[in-house]
Amino acid sequence: MWRCLFLMFLSLSSFLAFSVYAEESPRNYTFAELVKTERAAIVSIRSSRFAKEGGGPLKDFFSLPGNRLKPEVREGSLGTGFLIDSSGLILTNYHVIAPSNHLAEGILIRTADQREFPVRIIGKDPKIDVALLQIEGNAPFFSVTLGNSDQMEIGEWVVALGNPFGIEEMVTVGVVSGVGRALGTGPYDSFIQTDAAINIGNSGGPLFNIRGEVIGINTALNASTQGIGFAIPINMVRKILPALQSEGAVTRGWLGVMIQQLTTDLAKAFRLKDDQGALVSEVMKQSPAEQAGVLRGDVITEYDGKKVSQMHDLPTLVAETPVGKTVAMRVIRDGAAFQLRVKIQQLKDE
Image (cartoon, rainbow, N blue to C red; front, side, top):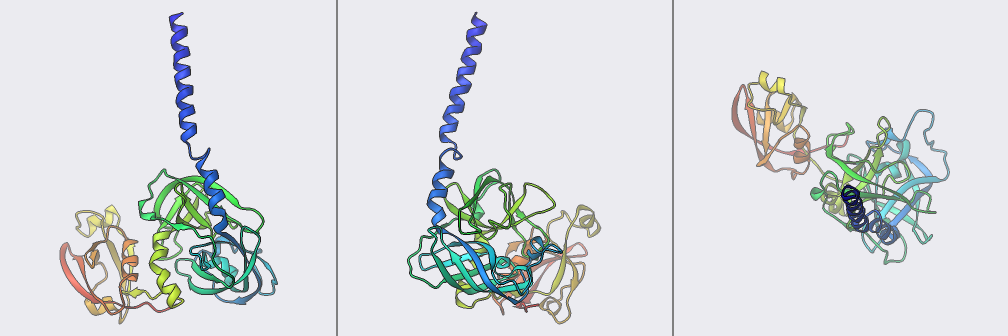
């Protein structure tokens, strides 16, 4: 009898514990309230015509052979965007407004309350797949709050919102399963990885934390792996927003080296203590790196006072350097560390 009572007590305790957790669980309350509140800032984006121009670095995710959008397409849904201020500024993916190598014209957006407005392209940055649009309509508009993507931790809940057809929102929920992910789409890869479903419909839309802050722009679904989505960290976008608003494009620094990731075996071969740094595999002719004395086989471990832990750290640091600035780099060559000074030039459009 005592055994029976003990088992009943354990079952009741487990039930009460689950009930308390369920009441506090964001899936039962917070997500619903978040969607109700933030849906007003989500817009669907469509176009009436297309003009030829190169697409963004993730265009291949959405431009499968035999299913490409053609220039003669007259009208179609492009994807999702979201309002970032009350004046009508919208963030979205570059590939959303430039599907299959064709920059969309006559872009229209539809808000959650079914109002439709024309928009103009304020700025675009194909290198990280971001575009900034401006509504040509009466303000104010409801807008999102931008969060801090650097504070995201693996395991945190996230919500991806989209409104691809202007009819009803698309909502998916998951957790952050990785940060700083590289997809091979470009030198500035540093994606948030999540198991929240992200596809063409909600690409360009916001990725929220459970506090209702945008921590990323939904950008692609890895077609080769089910259940994995990616988002551009909002802090990366924050850095280029002023340039997109004032110049319409982003100016980046250029060093002029090809690099590769160090492995344990390579580190041993180069007589390094560890595998931290970026290994120079090629130095471009007449580049800032060549003028500074960088050689093939050098390992760059520090740039402008910041540690280069892995290969992908260096392109971002160089890109953010003001053109014309002279910076110090810590380089290891033949097992010996020393410093080089290099004057950064402007990265030219390809």
